[in-house]
Image (cartoon, rainbow, N blue to C red; front, side, top):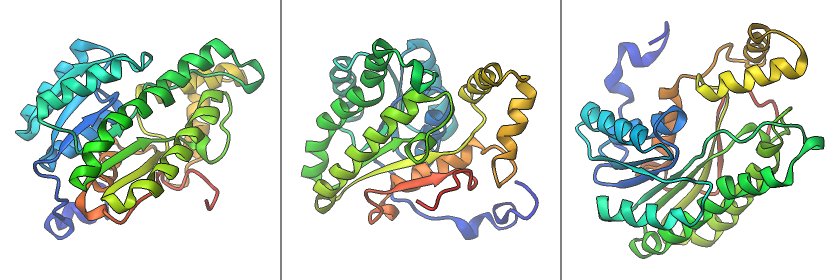
Length: 278
């Protein structure tokens, strides 16, 4: 823990029972990065998890590591989010593995980079399947049982493009707002059934995606990668990138019993990186 971090001196004082023991979670794109952080945090709270990835070996390995680390049930199931029809098989396999799904964590690989003026409609269609069609198809499978049990959590990973357009990230800017709008509409419809639908909006965390997008920005701006990275950090009031465990902690809370009255929200975990009020 860093200097002045209360968790380091009095860890017991900040403990909270999140009511996640025995809950069952399906997490997309969870073999690494933000998805892996969420899976780790849920498993640490006693939830059983299905880790999904397009790479069978990677998701199986991640699930095995999570199971060992947290003495939890963790299963790896591979599926390609670019093919919405595969979501039916993924959901059926997850239900078979865990007995049901209480928590749906919607994530995907980093969207294709590019400028708005140069958008390729074929790429747009592929990204729509990845970022919108597949998540909504999974929601449609999970929602009936959640409403019937009167308990469910649907959490979508958003991005800064939902709030303000980002340079060289036209897919983020175009498709993430669609999921935010859909999620809010759905939250209004199912809130009385004990189901929450929220968006978690991460700032810049140390992931492979950050390195790739920084290199792309450096090429676009005609500067070195180190300079592009320095500029990214300068744009964060906290003065640093986020730690994955910090993202996982907020994700676990939003999926918890304790967050039952947080619904239809966009919750930022960004070190105040996004400058707008709303």
